[in-house]
Length: 194
Ligand code: HEM
Ligand code: HEM
Image (cartoon, rainbow, N blue to C red; front, side, top):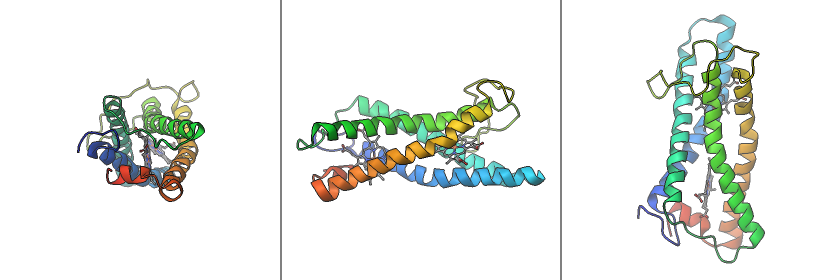
């Protein structure tokens, strides 16, 4: 079923959840690799093909994550959602809710900070969405050294993988706890529905 029910996630919510997981698994190593490619390139300024290819992949995947997150949030807010198992204690409910809210925040702030960094960049550097290299800037271009310049947003962007990783770790431990300790079907309803 496309829609969620009182007991389980519908196929759309599940599909969106696992497509973000897949994209993020590719995106994080690609981000580090892209930065390495930049560093190599600034030594010679020879061939920029790899700079453009890795950037195209990284920007596109990031903007896809952003779009999916916004759509997913809208879908979630206009649908019923399965409740947490009745056996959970109050602090466990708080922990689950906190982690989920923060994961939504990260899915939105992570790509926005990368997009803002390139937007602020004072030189000409394309922002890609697939083959389109004219993605508009979301903040004004700023000379380096002024407030809200490229390094400002890039620093936020670079630091997010720690807090993101911590949350994700908590989230995965939660999922495994439901599966193997509480055995309450919470992982199953996100994998296959009820
Ligand atoms: C889910 C979304 C995203 C994730 C998880 C992600 C992850 C990363 C990671 C892990 C790095 C390497 C950081 C480092 O070297 O310390 C990086 C770098 C970078 N990303 Fe992203 N990124 C995302 C979205 C985006 C988007 C949408 C853009 C731009 C449109 C972007 C632009 C950049 C830039 C410019 C850098 C280099 C920053 C620097 O100067 O060090 N990212 N990203
Ligand atoms: C990029 C990685 C991930 C992100 C951003 C993410 C995000 C989220 C969010 C925001 C929710 C809450 C859904 C809602 O209430 O609207 C959720 C639910 C869930 N996630 Fe993840 N997740 C990720 C990876 C994983 C992984 C790797 C697992 C399994 C090991 C997992 C298992 C679950 C389960 C079982 C639920 C359902 C909880 C319930 O039914 O109450 N997630 N995820």
